[in-house]
Image 1: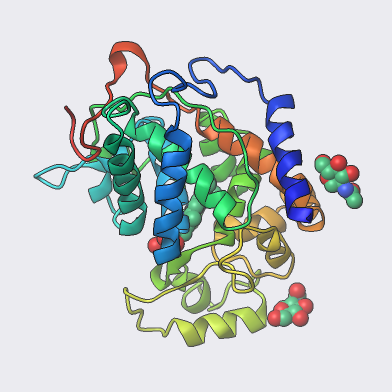
Image 2: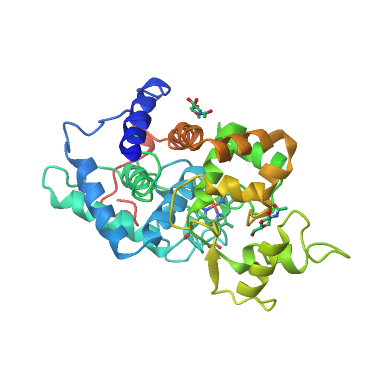
Length: 326
Ligand code: HEM
Ligand SMILES: *[C@@H]1O[C@H](CO)[C@@H](O)[C@H](O)[C@H]1NC(C)=O
Ligand SMILES: *[C@@H]1O[C@H](CO)[C@@H](O)[C@H](O)[C@H]1NC(C)=O
């Protein structure tokens, strides 16, 4: 019952706070060309989610990495025979294959409908799939804006300076997000995505074994938690081991991420700094105390994320195969 309330609430919210029409995007963009696109995508995503949970975390992270590098244009999905595409960069090599597979499956389902074939962009399919995985894991349901075109360029080199590093402090996070038009509050809300999914040990092992001269462990880490991390991630880091980022409810899109930060259980420096730094602590405390406030802020922020660098007109195309330009 509470869930239904929340759904209706966040759904209404997305009409009130956000303008229904942004620069280029709008809701129901495909109502003439492919009226059932949202339900087709939702069915394909739900089916894959039932097979594997990583569908959710993999797709959500994929959307973020797509939008921050060259805008939300599915450039992250392009492959290059010389391994020089975005997906070949060190920051994207750990993107879960199930995220890519989710888009491929949803695209195949859309193209099965003769009316829809090659009418819906891969960038929009990724945006819809992201909305669906957030809802499937217990997060807010929101109306998704559509109308993105797919880009024709994807380079390994463009990734490095456009994605945040897990060692970032608040100033570094803020400046990178501000560059994409996102506020500190947006950044904190979007970081809540780390309430689901995994991280490989190597992304944070410095915090537990080699923090700084004379201090092996990051003092902002909860001592109980750092011992658990050491058990799960031995000193000789096995690059294949991945652990839950939210140790309490790893498969739920909830506000426990922020409660964890209050207890020193943020996995990355970038997570924990949101609480350690007094300029962002009040927002963390708000989201920890009030899950509705978190959900509202997340819907606002992911909608803004979905508008970053959107391509229209002759800047892009509707790809026939999401992994290759037409
Ligand atoms: C704020 C700065 C951020 C940093 C520094 C960061 C960094 C990372 C790192 C290092 C990982 C682990 C990757 C691995 O070892 O495989 C990760 C995972 C993940 N990130 Fe972020 N991230 C940030 C923001 C975001 C945002 C804005 C989103 C989405 C809205 C997001 C969604 C995810 C998800 C869902 C995973 C889990 C992926 C999986 O289970 O396959 N992250 N992030
Ligand atoms: C550290 O975590 C434990 C439980 O895992 C919790 O009881 C304790 O309050 C936390 N410590 C701090 C300083 O938040
Ligand atoms: C939680 O946040 C929502 C949305 O901002 C607000 O309407 C509500 O009053 C807050 N609840 C509490 C208990 O503060």
